[in-house]
Image (cartoon, rainbow, N blue to C red):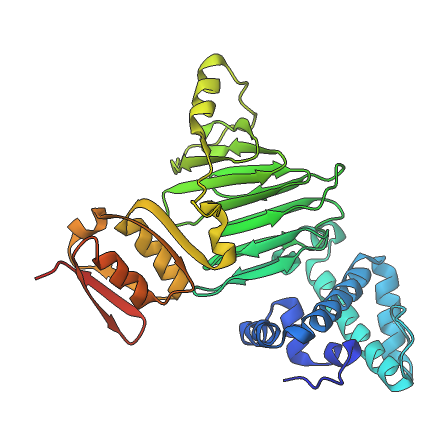
Length: 369
């Protein structure tokens, strides 16, 4: 763990922290994400240090290519390290260290540029340009995007943005489920991309659920307005109003998708309207679609098969059914910070079944004998 006396410049000199910023080593990424979780008092320091690294890298990457090469050569040939980018005033020792770090980053930029030769190719979105935020099974996390928007990420979900997010565009690529509270910016629309739909907003709060292994993709609007584009329905567009949601069954077509938006005729207006549903609110006033943000597990008259996928993400387990008939059982329940055994025992009260848990990770469900 880092010492509480360390500051931003100290973090920028740690190889493991640089790997975390670049998302290049999953062990280092997990280490720093875990550090933030168990040491929330230092979360702001880590976030600011990471922002400083990104600023440094972007400044170098966006500089004129010839200037980068010249500076690099001068830095290598010179007996003393020359600054590559102006930093805040710090102690002389730390200043020299930061300059060395800047030169290392410049070298990386120079090497990559030389490998790809063409500057135009270098500026395209490559894997190195993508920032990934992920919540593993059994965890949920909240992040703040560079534009000030907030994103709560549910278990087993991934959110990706490019390095120019908030400057040239605000496009998010989602696999799984996330709740977005969007910072208003009329000039740069906020767009969430999933396999089945795109959700466009200017300033609003909404939830999107789009797990790869599930049949339905959903968007639920809490406040504001969003425009939903159904990719698999010839880019059919419809607007959601507060307390509305759309639940779309994924088609998974192989043919080429239409590139132009569908003009809403009388027939597809009726279809669009039929896709709209009211969001579900419990007797306690909790919105079911975003209950997960408050660590609440809620399902209403849902099949056991669907609930099992929810429990797998929630508790980081694998659930197997020995009898397929169990998959069609329907349950309703509201749980708050309950463990898996409590949830399963509650379900057993309404429909009889047995279960075993092996190594705390493998759950086998079968019919009662």
